[in-house]
Image (tube, rainbow, N blue to C red; front, top):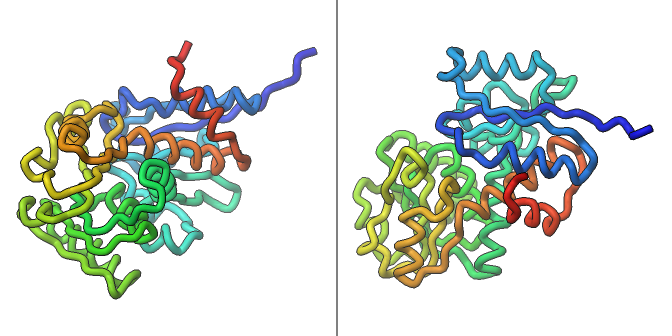
Length: 282
């Protein structure tokens, strides 16, 4: 008789996630370890409920865990226990594991960005960075940059209080770090070594680029947190300007790899998962 396969229910809560590849990644990765994974897209406005209601419904329905994406990564934090002090201080969560003791929060954007950066740039230091966007993913990337040789961070954000809050948090974590909040992009991009997009600009439905090409001349590398589509205008123009590019696909891959370990309590081979991502779903 065939062996009974474990069944695991997961989900993604976010807005504008119709084209997310997370369901395919987790469901196909489950096959590698003999687990039947069902992964649902949960859009609060489409379901007529608040984020908190959708979260509670998933927990009550027996979901093992959730991924959280824009714009809920900060909003979910009060609903969780966050054990890792590095994640607690950055104040944003993208992965939730439901346990008998309550929901636990993780941030695989943080670990995923570090891994993706190292895969492309090795041990090269981040240097001086201009980062656009100080929301949930911006927080994760900023704290990741602290571990990647960040010398100076210039934050560009329309919500200035949000940017100042992130700047204060970073200064508390790394008192010697120069962190500036600026309202004008040219000032922030001038002489920056790295250009980072942590806004939805460039995502399907939010077309455009956060940094025009004429401001890219001084930089040597660029990262875009957007991964749908992976070939954003921002990265296309950065590559044309001669910058080394770190695609949002790298962040997507590694955050998924690390979230898989959280959900299933076991590792999966990086090469095996890359093979899954490279092949179209049947």
